Length: 76
Ligand SMILES: [Zn+2]
Image 1 (cartoon, rainbow, N blue to C red):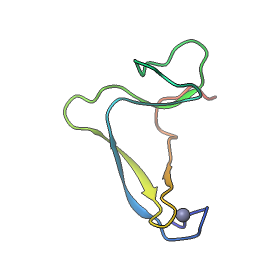
Image 2: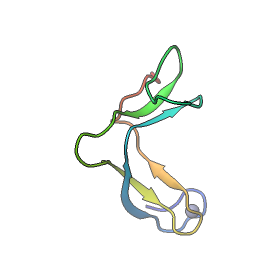
Image 3: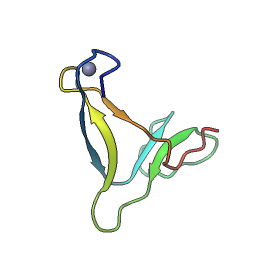
Image 4: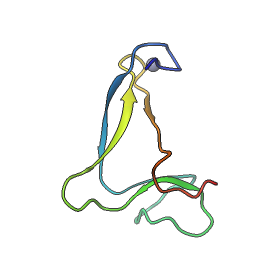
């Protein structure tokens, strides 16, 4: 996969993470989505090992691209 920003070949790998949420707002304590906030890539605290999110990292400009389609969100 080519980086859409600088056209370098991206490195496939995994974002290894714990509880996670992409949100339009900052969460101070909990990562639980609430109210009317728009969120994506919501993952609860993992049970055994970290979550493994397939993604690509650019070795040149260091951007990481994640396809969050299959993860919990309320964007629709
Ligand atoms: Zn790049």
